[in-house]
Image (cartoon, rainbow, N blue to C red):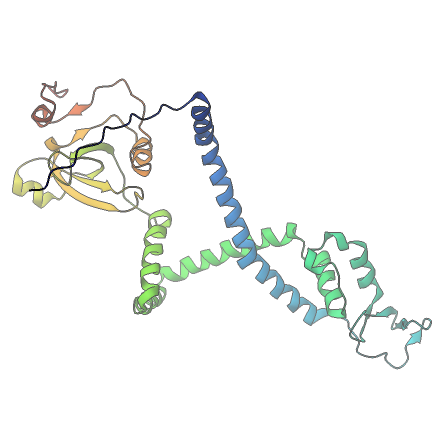
Length: 319
């Protein structure tokens, strides 16, 4: 037989100094708003890079293609204004672009040169006639004070019409077919399913109403979990057992949008004096954020349920 190694004495944890406690306390206060701000900045940056910028570029290029007054050569009948390539044609003065051997109206060049500081950095050095016209359209017709409200209006309109379309039978058939096709893709279906669960929980019109917070013995006796009462359970189940039942949604930590729905006897649930928000904070934080004492007695439907665990009698408030 091998000798059992001697256990090393446990070293007591070194208490934190006042400086460390102050730093941790300051971090706990600053971290939530800082993380929230960084998350909002990241979302805004992603929307600008992947949505707003491509739409602006496409719209600007389309406007330039449809409206640009760019001449490849000096037309016949034009009046020269010196030896620098400037000429007048049909009442407009044209100047040569810096590169490309093309001509554009002088008012476009002057407008861009006067307000070049208002342009993005990648557009502040226009060379060709097309570059000048894109900068001109950006400054004259597409400032951010106009494009951002327009994008929001277009987005809301698109969401409205998509929602109305999907409410019809044809729209539902298309969505069903699309999801069936997505579910055939090995990697995409897992990502799509996870994203859809989150968006359905946040954005869908849910009729689930949590009435109160309870503690139940789940997933086994002796283990207590927080849950939200949603209804009085299934009538056939109540009739078969001959007792009052409740349906309880038991969320999982740290993502409470998923969980389990259980049906238990009403007398096996302990009503807690907690708000829904306090319970959600407790679940999301994995038990770190505990609600402060409410100064109220919990309602026990079955005192014997607690007596066997606590070893002391509790008064049933319903008595």
